[in-house]
Amino acid sequence: MPFSLSHRPASFGLFLCLSISLGADLSHAAGNAEAGAQVFKKCGACHTATEPMNRVGPSLMGIVGRPVATFTGYNYSSAMAVFGEDGKVWDEERLSEYLMSPKAMVPGTKMSFPGLRKPQEIENVLAYLKTKAAP
Image (cartoon, rainbow, N blue to C red):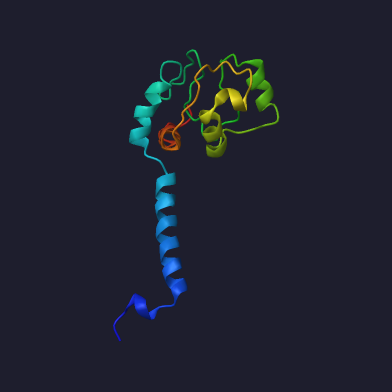
């Protein structure tokens, strides 16, 4: 007998739909580094991701996986220093939350940027930053 969805239980259709939608969500979650480079232009006035030098803000080279408030030579706000005292690391989840609203996560931060409002922009900029290894 040839394969037909009509001969499958109803749960198979649900499984198929869930599998397709989960697969789409997983590929969406990865972000696009090329698009992230464009988003990073919003950050580039204060940060660099291609050089291990500080500007108004610290270099973001190697930010993913780096302990909070630890880039050499940057004078972090006391609020950011306190936020990082317990060994927090800038993982993707923490960066996503921070980039959505920096002042909500770290009241008193020097970062004046209000945040990225679109989740896709955050995913893309994170994909871009992950391509920039620590110095």
